[in-house]
Image (cartoon, rainbow, N blue to C red):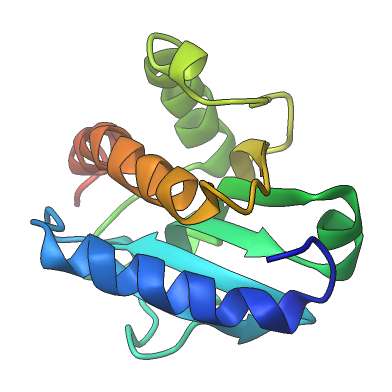
Length: 166
């Protein structure tokens, strides 16, 4: 696998999805597809969104994604982040996006060092974002490490949402 061309990563994401699902997913749904010029792999729980779980695109909710667009592919990188979209609209919850983002970042601080090249200095829509290098020998394993690592973060998200349940 050479860096360049996002279509080639669809197969790698599909394999990563299958390998992740072979393990205990912890209630996380794994989705992959192509969206806005990016190969995308996502993790999300149904309770974190109002959207249908059989679509890659989200209009509301919280999700973890790994994606590669043309720019990232040229740099030999895959990006990852946690998005929080239109949290005020989530059914069964009363959420202020900025407060949720601040509480998330406070809780994430103890985990931050285990996430490569990560930043949290974004607005409330992007809770955190980072990137990993696309190493042809270990890229699929690198994706799985991020997916597994997110399981720990998902319990933080569950706790923060539960505090905001109506």
